[in-house]
Length: 81
Ligand SMILES: [Zn+2]
Image (tube, rainbow, N blue to C red; front, side, top):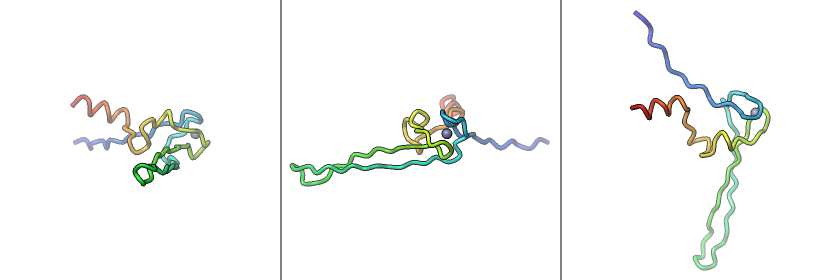
């Protein structure tokens, strides 16, 4: 009897230093602009994702944000279903 192999997924690599991104730093910057017609603030947020090892900007690795990242092999499984 064979033991079932546990499926694991490797994180993406930093495009600058090649480190496995087991951790990613993300800083969000919100800019609120007062809307004189509505009388409310309107927020516009941007987030900067950086590699903990070299500090490179990881926007090209996570164009949709870190929380929306889908491992390519997982994506392939999902699409073939
Ligand atoms: Zn790096």
